[in-house]
Image (tube, rainbow, N blue to C red; front, side, top):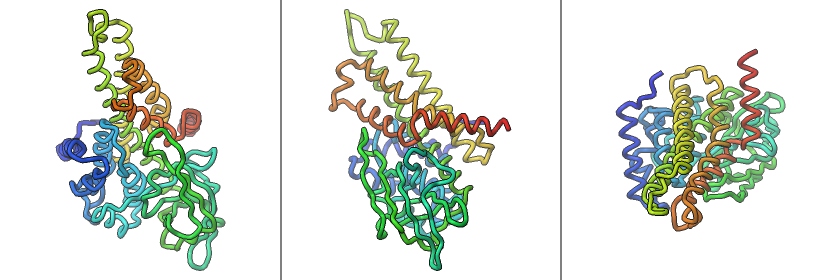
Length: 352
């Protein structure tokens, strides 16, 4: 396998970095859309550049390097790429390309991250479905035009539906988090969903979950790389006892630990995205990546804070944005216990 990015991907990464540097936070999403960085991952038939998951990943990594909050993860990794890879929602994808429409997906249920057989029920009727249940882990739900919701049809089995969050019976509630991008709670009470809102069956749900993790680990890769850059610059310039902090053995060892975590995160991101991009056997890469995001990423950010001393607690200094985003990202992938359980289950499946 060769993880070397093609020239279009390198160009996209450079453009994303430039757009972030030149745009205010409240203008960033519109700037990303105007620069063509949202459409580049989508198929040519809807006006995109056909770069697929790899195109989304390079932009997410650059956003992570600067710990900026945008709807790009929810719209691309969860919504648009899932629809395009399932051959659904062409008109909605054109809205994403032309107007920057925001999409999202509901990843979890109470006590059940990434459920294969959701407790949220969709009862078929003459004109579609009536959907009832509770969903957690829905990023940017307050701005989304449509939300992909895994359900269990009764009868019919697991399926993925497109739900309008403004429809009667839908309740979108903000859930407290560490940063501004904490995911929302979605309540569904006999919500009418038309028959043509069906995206697919169990395979579509599995694709959504893989894309969710690939996008999360790509953003986490950027977060840790950006925090490491801040920390190395700090310990190289900060003096103690007449010497730079970086020259102390204990500091050097801790920086080395963060560097190793960052390189591992980078490798996991590249491998997970590469498998999606090429259609290779996913193996357990997505589960390993989710566990790493849930455990190693927050721990490495904690080390960065420690090495900054009191400066790391100053909200005028950017490091707090990285750790807040890492905390919310860890919860978004399911948390440490659940991701370890999923990893163990997938590993056992692969051995059977």
